[in-house]
Amino acid sequence: MAFINASSPHQRTRRSSSQIMVLVMLCLIPGIALQSYFFGISNLLQILLAGIVALSAEAFILKLRKRPIINTLKDGSALLTAILIAISIPPLAPWWIVVIGTLFAIIFVKQLYGGLGQNLFNPAMAAYVLLLISFPVQMTAWLPMLSLQPFELSFLDQLNTLLTGQTLDGYSVAQLSVKIDGLTMATPLDTLKNSLKSGFTSTEIFDSASFKAASAQAILWVNLGFLFGGAILLAKRVIHWMIPISFLLGITIFSFIAFAYQPDLNGSPLFHLLSGATMLGAFFILTDPVSAATTVKGRLLYGFLIAFIVVLIRNVGGYPDAIAFAVLLGNMCVPLIDYYTQPKVYGGKA
Figure 1 (cartoon, rainbow, N blue to C red):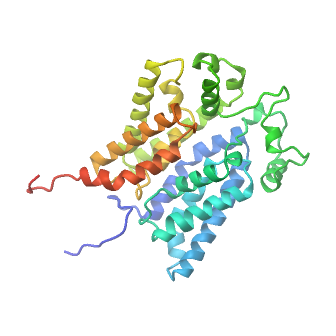
Figure 2 (cartoon, rainbow, N blue to C red):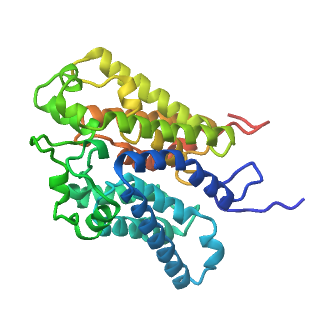
Figure 3 (spheres, one colour):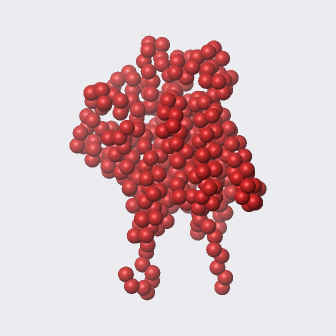
């Protein structure tokens, strides 16, 4: 009997890598649709730009490496990476932000390691961390949902802001992020962290005008959209249940411990589950078959470890969301996790 050796990702189903990537991208649609509905169509413009850059960069590197171009591009991995980067950055971030992030993800994190199946880190999250550290102002310029913005933004306004940094009427992103009464609007996680540092309790923060202006309701719906798409992936057995379930269970347990210990200084488990990129991370980022753990016990440990790091950074660290940092730290631990969680060979000794 002949056995065929192939690079990861390994799947027990008959689906090819390209079919898996297409299914994942299709399941991203509910969350992306809600994100675009609440925060503007510029979200789709970022996806379009990132997709063009990703495919072009991968084709260029493949040509330099003298590897087949069309068949590799067809696997969909570069396009999926581009989408994850685009929906992780502020919709009205300058065009060069998504270009730099996508080029870094495809060229340095993916192709220089050998391409799909060889990269040690999740390309999208590595790019996100690079952008967040290098360009913190642009990467934290999240605008509130459209209904809370002081100025109505048309499609041309959003396109012009993405390309030039200003709307057609000359308003900058900084001006768009401040209401007429001078109240600055940020994300719920960012609002909670900054307000806690200022001496407010969580109860006071959740009842404050600044938190109500933080688009918490919209972000909740976006998380539910990604949860819906993730549930489809689980039902179709495209991803294994161990990582998302252990991650969400870990978020619940660790955030509950912190909330029970000091309820006035920590968010509730429900708040952590439906804020930031929790659901996107659980089903579409942590489950990357290349950079995640591969054993059954290892996947469970991998999910719990990342959940612990996320809650720790959110409650104690300097960044409000922490999904990207936690995923990269989890990727670093994968070789060790897989080594110590290998199942016993049947008939062999412990």
